[in-house]
Structures are given as structure tokens and as C-alpha cells.
Amino acid sequence: MPAPLRDLCALARDPAGLDRDWAQGVVAHHAPGARVRAVLPRAIDVGTTTRVALEVDHDAPDLPRRWFVKLPSRAWRARAITALPQLPQTEVRFYAEVAPRLPIPRPRCLAAIRRPGRGFTLVLEDVVARGARVGTPTLALSAEEAGPLVELLAFLHAELWEAPALRAELAWLAGPVRRLEDRLGSALALPLIRRGLRRAGDAVPASLRPGLLAYARARRPIMAALGAGPACLVHHDVHPGNLCWDAGGPALLDWQLVRIGEGVSDVAYLLATCLEPEVRRAAEPALLARYRRALVGAGVTPPADLEARYAAHLCYPLEAMLDTLAIGGLMDDAAALGLVRRAAAACADHDAFAVALAAC
Image (cartoon, rainbow, N blue to C red; front, side, top):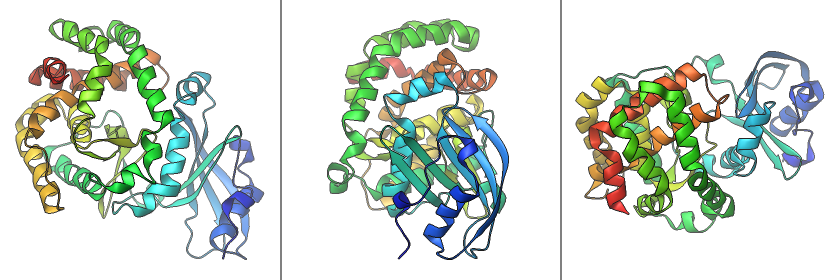
């Protein structure tokens, strides 16, 4: 048996710590006796985490040689935003404890280490190196591309649909840290949305703003009402920059916001942010029907009012994109503004804020 990762030097504080000795600890966990000859950093990107692309020269036959490493963000604003809700640590724990049980495509995880007060290190295979295409926040999907993603979400949701595991070994996904995040989200909703609206300009129509501000004021009871649907595991951040495709089809990246929630919220996030309004309007009924069929095919019964709940859940993608714009530094501003425009159009088309307010 390989040594537990906690006994190896797999925790790195910053990119400078990603040296040959560090990589040797990761490789030795998977292939005892294998040796690392060199480590070459290829790129560093800073957002909610510091992301480092590495090329690792080693002689382990079954391990990838291109790695994608996530470390604590070097940007103080991103660290401040993610510190209390522990978003990066949530993703590390997801890969360590939850991902192996899910029958959906995902990057191979080589190390997922978190230590309270000391940081975290997440090491994934670099999916681009094996030929995958990774989305960007400005990507617009076609209806044909969205269809397999809707089915992928259905498979994810059906796997733990109202499962006892959600209330037992995965209860941490709805535990104190997540409840704190929800309280912070409700407390900060109004000032962040107001700042986001100032920065968004005409990307959010004036006719939508009163409903959006009413939603912000009533966010906590609205979230409670929307959380009363069938419980399952949700990604909660299905924008185009968190998608990838390879020969096997689409996959989801960046699981920092994973939680227990209502599955159709992921579908709302996907369609509101990934499709241009005219494409979404034409394809929406068929895509929602495809999601319903995939759930039924996986053995679960979707709620009868799925379409109405979809409409109510459209509020959150717009809130999330306005928050991103308000905070700044989490995504390119022009990209965030484009996603605001798409999500605002979806909310306007479905009178989403009135539907959400009526639900609570």
C-alpha cells in the first residue's frame, strides 16, 4: 500500500514550493519506487485560487506528466472572499471524498490535501494535455452542445437524488460552513447587487431592476423556498468557463461551490449563462424536456412543476454574475458583463423575480 498523502510532502504554500521533492511525494503515493527527474512550471493564473500548470518528468508509467495544481490565491481580494466559506477547501474535499463515487467524467485527481490553518493543495491531471477543450467565460454554446450537458447534469443529480448519504456521510455539504456562506450571501446581496448594477450599466434593463432589488431584500426566504425541492448534489457554478469537452463528451470543472440543492438550479445556471438569448429561447423547452427524460431514465421522478422552479432559479445566475462584477478580479470584467447580459435576458423572459418572490 502506498503511504497516505498526509505523510508525504504534498502540501505546497505557493508556486515556489512545487519543486521536485514535492512532486516526488505525489508520484510516490501512486507509484512507489518511481522517480521524478524534473518539474517545469508552464503557466500561472490567479483567481479565486492560484492555478499552476506543470510539466513533471517522471518514470511512473500510468501517471500523467502534465499537472494542474490549485493553491491558495495570491490575490488578497480573492482570499478574503473565499476564506470564510472555505470554497477552495470544499473543492479539495469534494475530490477526496465525493468525486470517486460519481459516475460522471472529471479530471483525474492525483492529490487532494487540506490542513486547517496551513492551506490546501489540489493536484489534477491537465485535461488540455490529453486533448480536451476547456471553455472560457465568453463561450456561447449551441443548442446541440447544450443537450449533452443537460443530460450530464441529470446523471449527476440522479446519482444522489434524495439519497440517505446526503443526510449522513455527505452532510458536511450542508453543514456550518455552507450555512455561513448562505447567511453571508443574504446579508451582502443588496449592497453587492447595487454595486454590480452600477458597473453593469445597460446590460440589465431598467424594467428588471425593481424586481432584482426586491429579490435581494427577500433573498433568505427565497433561498429557503428554492431549497425545498428534491435534494441532490449540485455543481452550482455551471458557467461556460467551468466546462470542458474531450472525445468522451462534456465534463464539469471547478467544484468550489458544490452543495446539496435542487437539481434544476444547475440547468437554470447552464442555460442562463452559456446560451445567447435567442438560442436559449428557441431551445429551452426541448432542453428542459430532455433533462426531465434523463432524470426519469435514471430512475427518479422530477417535480411536476419543474418548469416553474427552473424560472425561479434563474434569479441566482444573474445575482452571481453581478456579484462577480461588483467584487472585481474574479473574472475578466468584459466576460462577466457578457454573462450578466445573458442571465438578465433569461430573468426578463421568465419574470423570474416575480416567480421567486411568489415561491416564498
